Length: 138
Image 1 (cartoon, rainbow, N blue to C red):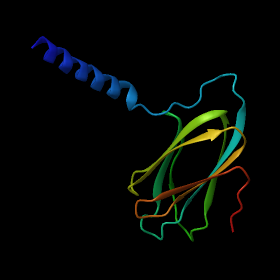
Image 2: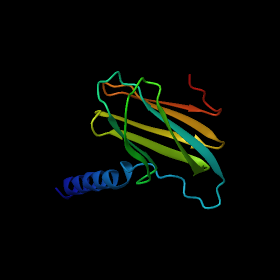
Image 3: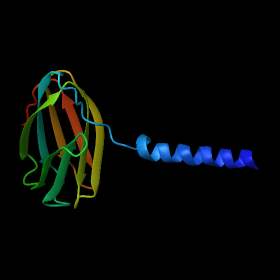
Image 4: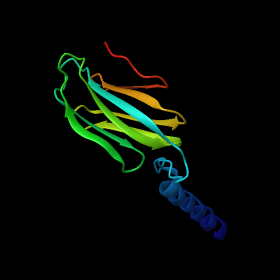
């Protein structure tokens, strides 16, 4: 009987640890000595008018909101540019839309300048493209 109690206690302890630490988001690199690199994010809404305007919220790391605004789909070739500096290391980008019913969660590594293109395509779909070279839009 005591063995069953210990086994149940072990499972409860495991579940508590999993909930506290196993499900936490990846923290943005916090090393103060890490080198910083420029990161440019281009955001567009090419959703064919399914949701117009679409609300897009971009966070890098935990609680580090970069963008929270509405984007008009227009002719599908409208891009908004956001420039920031990120420290060398792994970062997590989380993208949500309150009215477009979509989300994206990606971990990427910064070790040189990067260009990111984020598009909302409608029907619950974000697309993220990460490049080590400047992007050209036509």
